Image 1 (cartoon, rainbow, N blue to C red):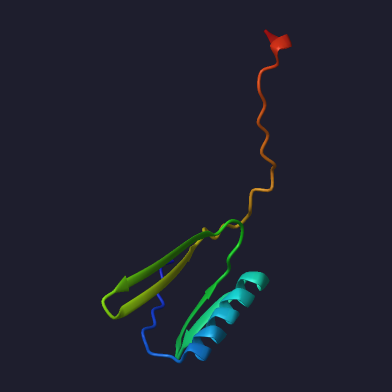
Image 2: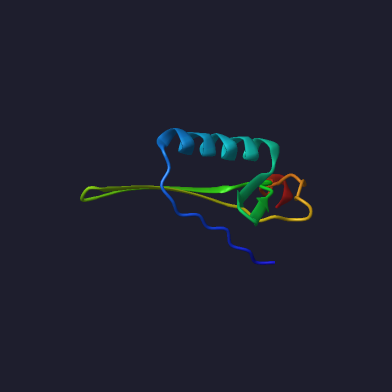
Length: 91
């Protein structure tokens, strides 16, 4: 299923801070819901999340971009990683 939720608008810094707190809480609880009117998208971050932070200055314009990416899987791999080297006694 592909679904895109996109919002572009102007907000006061305190409103943006509240949005960031909601995103933080969503990562902590495992569910982030984006809503605007009838448009709703719920995301369930699990496991490892890739994080990208970009900042840009261009003339008078400033840009801060935060991107979080993960794969939603039915079941997480809980098996531990095991790496071993050949023992000299094995030769």
